[in-house]
Image 1 (cartoon, rainbow, N blue to C red):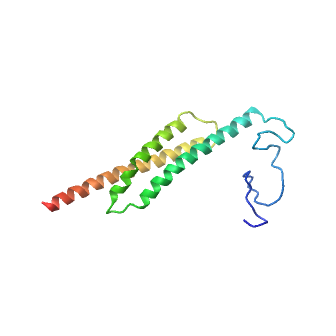
Image 2 (cartoon, rainbow, N blue to C red):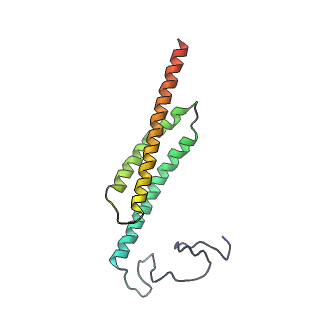
Image 3 (cartoon, one colour):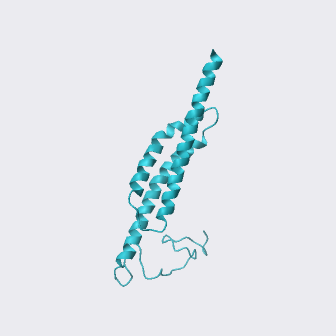
Length: 145
């Protein structure tokens, strides 16, 4: 970013490099500049958002490993993706833990659906890879006879 446009760690999105206040809220202490506490609803909203961010980071780490392995798969080494069964299992467990109790946040359901769709797609890919590997093994055995 240049001196006119810089990202702020607060995530305000204005992208202008200047000192400014962001409403009446100071995120780190969750208090207003005057020292007044936020109302309980705002605190719950922020805590929920922090939980969702933590959940997303955990899941994205597993996504990265699975996706990296998937990128290396070719017709000749189709079984390579099967090495990710443990990571998919971990991701399923994390999904269950993260989404077992609904969180009162507008993005929660979107996040849950996206993660569920990712799991369905990856499990389908693993199933197809298993079938292709079996077909290759059968074809190899047939040609050797």
